[in-house]
Length: 126
Length: 214
Length: 300
Image 1 (cartoon, each protein chain N blue to C red):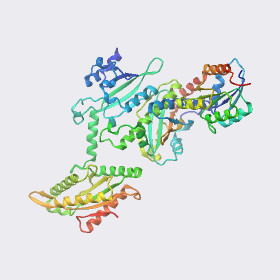
Image 2 (image 1 turned 120 degrees about the vertical axis):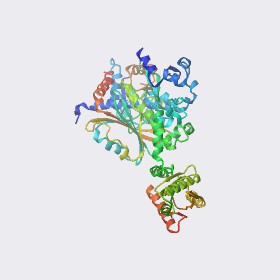
Image 3 (image 1 turned 45 degrees about the horizontal axis):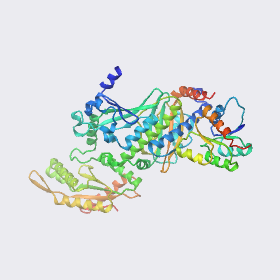
Image 4 (image 1 turned 135 degrees about the horizontal axis):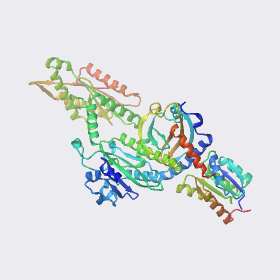
């Protein structure tokens, strides 16, 4: 079961939207970071069950953060969320090892579906 | 001041607008790739509220790297209402003409290269502004009409930047982004300047957008 | 009912296209000017009757309007027309086709998705003809019919910026009829006018098609030579000089031999503004006059 979630996004509004989209009937421990590098540090510290990662961020962008996170833990479950829905971006993100890619703005339905998928596959160890 | 400070966007509302612009420009960028066959990178937009009198100064500072610019001005009219300024550095017309690879012979013999370059800038600007504004208003559930774009070609910023867009003492929300055509040496600036007239509606629309998550 | 009447009564062409660019509506104005009945074109692609529209630009703009719900503008200035119709009135006699200003915009369905686009076609032939006449008058010298000084000054500025941007070469020739005051004093001003007209016409026939010859002052001419380096400009000036030297002007049974002095200047990077180039050509012309007239002097 997913318990700890890290949300990496430079926009507070966007982080707020992610939080609002999580199922209301469940308890999560939430962590936030405002850029890719801070996100990476936070990941090392808390080893979350799931990461929501924005692509366009200052300091370290999403694709780079994704690659760094996977270096730390190759089984990390990272859900990339972006407004950029071009095929090139999608394939780039998936090739880098993202669990999936969600289109911004998120919806509760899309988030619920992702949780179901992650918990169903049992990909995450421990 | 013709508008009270509390009527301007709050910090939260600016953040929402910022995120909306992120989403809108991301979509615009994806769709633009299909329309003009080239990937346009739209950098993270920046939102701020300024007094109209300070606009020319703000814009010239933003583009201070360039001595000579071409500038396209187009107004959009809906409940979302304002003026878009698209600014290209010198020489962009030639690059854009190459980008489209249109047949010069398609036009009359008496049409000069300069006119074709100007037309390329106008056409790209019309599409780019249409894409960005179109996606923003789509998210805000509005529709806008556009005036024909006007162009000032290859001039100094001090001559080219329009000073009298709105009532000078009113406030304006400026949304700024830097864009780049990938694989091409073309970049520029887009400013969407919303008049204070649309603030009331904009505040409401932004809050409505957030409400769907409450 | 009323909307349909407006659609057909309005003095503007209106066309509605679907996503595949098939014609969905075709108003009476379009019927009258194209000689294509609505029932004959509705349902078929717009390109079947107007293959000229099957070009990247038109398609690009259709895509854009469908995707973004924006508007596209096809101005008469560059495009002349989208639909090749015959001009409607006598104003259009100088145009092969009706001049049009066209707009394309979105039409949405109930769920706010752009499902169709409209095209509006406005006949601007009369305005275009009027504008063309004004533009021509504004750049012509009344006596000789060659360009006037205003036009040349504008052209010179253009050519100057073109040089600064793209480093294209160009040259300038200033010339002045020798001892013109004597012609006026001896034979009268009417004769002077005949001489000026004659010289202008002769020079016009010698210069290249791409050059711009203007009457710059009373008996002073200026010729702008785009893409001409120093040698081309000097040899053209020399050809002009010889042609004039060999010609004879007849007025009232009398034959006059006219000569002209020339100053040539070539644009190079150190020339900082267009006026400086004019001054260089003028100085060279002055030197030609001082050293005996009827000769070409090049600016150093």
